[in-house]
Structure formats: structure tokens, C-alpha cells
Image (cartoon, rainbow, N blue to C red; front, side, top):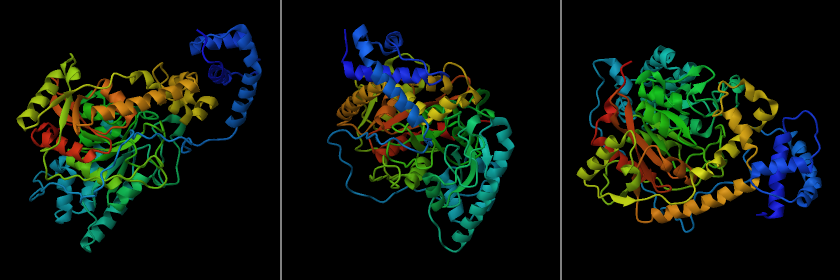
Length: 549
């Protein structure tokens, strides 16, 4: 059946323009060429209709060639901003104080190596009570980074000079009674897609391994303001895919024969191995959930629009999210509290209260679970079922629910389109051939293939995304938090809708590797989400087990 003429003509123009990108000659656009492009588009025009398009397509191609001559850096966002808010959505109106749980007396361990697995909360108490200095703690973690990075390949740049300078400043301030809070003097690492002045920001990729960006990412600035100590820029799979980067593969400290997964590969591996108390990762489509599962860490993927991405590599402007990878749920809350909120530069970032109270459990919080997803056969079903049983024993009344029966995996090509645009110069210049991974499932091929996704279909997919957002709001109308297996349709769907999640260990496989469960929250509902996840984690001990290095 014949489709609408004008939009389809635009599609053919885009496809043909992309097809000609790599050609060295200026081949004429013919009816035959249009007929071939129609096969990619899945549409059919008459000969006369195709002939009528030729002048428009030639004009479009000239326009493409003209704008390609103007450089676009990765930090230039489109003049279109994704908004995950459904119709009728209202933010909480009250801003309550941030409250963490009581910790009691914390002592230095007899075996100093045990410090490697102390939580941020515990280390903060040691620093606050001056039982250890930030300089000593920083040197401790720098030594571990240097010692074990040779095995794990989790750090791209160890920022030792900066770390020691920041630690000395922290000790001076604390001694003078100017204690900034729970992150003051605490070492951390950042995924190397966040810019830091004076250091390379490599994005894990060969074409960018010498790149220096003369700014600090907003998240780096906020952590510095909180007094945290940057010790390393950590690995990510090239351009935020997987765990393979220009220096090799980042490994899982639980099993050195396996990769750490990605793309927040170094963030999860380093925290799991006790090389850092916490790290900043990012997620576009599983990059916090997957490595946290593989390495047994606790990760928070915030709501889209919660944490500013200024100074971070853009992969997908409508899906990228920055978040913490830690040992505990409350550590995630502490770090998130320091980095969330608008900065006036990332226009997708919105103001909203974060009323976390770690002294409360989940009484009064409505909790659901994805009934059909938990009932299907999958490798970690036993551990996940035990998680539901544990929550019921803790007093949770679990409400069965289902995900919307609307396209989600089918519209995930939105990511490929945006990523191809973000790295268009890499494709057009041919420098994508420098990247380490060159197979069918790697970025170079994905970027090229995405050029043949029509602009109209990209917009249509975003319209389907609007329906998905609205239907998710309907599903969660009477629910605050729900549980999902960490992998499955929920992972893709909620990365498209922008909902937050906490992923944390919930058991171990027969061979000893950790498994995980995912707690999902409402949009901007991180406070209740973290409270429920914390209550579960406090009742279990999976996060207290560590790999033997």
C-alpha cells in the first residue's frame, strides 16, 4: 500500500544521503537508486512518484553536505529535549532534611586491609571522629589501585597528585572544624566519560585516548564541593559499550576469567575489589545495572533529569543518566544527595525534592512485583523468588503488576540514532576504523547502520515513547516501588521512560559469582526507592561478602 508521499520522500532523501556519505564521487540520484532505498525503508512508490522526488533529494543532499562542513563537538546537544514527565505529573512540594541511619561507634580494624570494604558511611565516621586522616585513607586506596589495577584493568588514569592535594585540604578543613559532611575526605573514582581539568578524558576509545577537555564536569565539581577525593578516572567500554577499552578488558574481581560487564566497567570492578569506596558510573541501557550485577556492587540509576550531565560524554541525549556505584544502598543515597539537582546548563535537569530518611523502613510504602516476569524460567529465578519471600517476612504486602503491553524493545533504536549523531564525525572521517571492537555488534557498525533509520521513524518511535510513559504512570498510580528481575524487558522499557532503579546483590550462583535484584521507583521517587532497597539489604548479608583477590 502506498504511504504518505511527503514524509516518505523525506525518508528516502535521508536514506540516500546517508548511503552517499562514504562515496568518493557525486553519483546522480536516479529512480533506480530510489527504488533500492525503498527496500530499506519498507515502503513502495510508483515510478512517477519516485521521478518527482529527484530534485528534492538532490537539494537535500546538498544541504547535508553543507552542514557536515560545520564541526559539531560532542557537547552540542540537539535543540530538542526529552521530558519523561507524564500528563498530570506533580512533584512533591515539601523539601525535608536528608537523614541517614544511625551508625554507632566505628573503630579502625586491627587488619588495616579490612578498610577496603568499609562503607562510605563508616569511613565518614572514622574521618569525622579523626580516627583516620583523609591523607592516610587516600594513600591506602591509591596503593590498592596501583596494586590491583594490573590484574583488573579498571583504571585509565590514577589522579594521585590531585587526590593527595584534595586530601590534605580536607584534613586542614576538618582540623579547623569546617566539616562539610559525609563525603568530606572520602576517596572515589569517576568513569572516564566525565571531564576533569588537567587530565585526559579518553571515553575509553582509541580515537580519543589523548583527548584533554579543559573543564570539570558538573558532577566532579559537586563532589569536590562536598569534599570527596578524586583518585582515579575509571575504565568504560569504548564509547560506553561493554567492558573492552583501548587498554584491554576490565575484569570481574570475583572471576578473573570474566569481564566486569559495562559500560561502567571500572566503576563496578574497582568498588567490588575494595580499591575505592564508591564510584560514579552512567547508564543509557544497562550500564549501571549490568556491571553492578556482575561485580556484586550496589548501583543507583537515577531518574532521567535528576543529575546534570554537563561535562559528560553524550551517547544518547534522551537516555544518558549519571549515578553512583557503591557498597550499600545508603552509600548510594549519600552520593546521590551530593550530585542531584539542576545546574542551569543541562536543560533536561529538573528541580525536585529528595526526601530520603534512612531511619525509616518501608512501612506505608506500596510495593509491587512483576508477576509474569518472576514466574518465567530464567537462570536466577531461585534467588529472585527468595528475595520476594524475604520482603514478605519483613512485612511487605507485595502487589502483582505487569508492564505496559506497548512497544519498548521495538523502539530502542532511538539510542542508536542519537549515538550515531553524537559520533557522526567519527563515522564520516573514517576514524571509527581505529576502535578496538569492529564486529557486527560494535559501535562502528551500529553508527553506520543507524544512518539508515529514517528521521520520521525516529520521531514516530518517540511518539510511541510518549504513550509508554503515560501508561507506566497509570500502572504506578497506586504503587511507590516495584521489584523486577535485573534483566529482561523492564530494563529497556524503564531506560526509555526514565524511571529510577536500585540494583543490589541478592545471592550467589553455584560457581560463586553474585546475582542481583532490581528495585524500581516512580519518576523522581528515589527517596522511597532507596528506603525500601535499604530495608531489604539490611536484612540480608550478600553485600558484605567480597571477592578474594
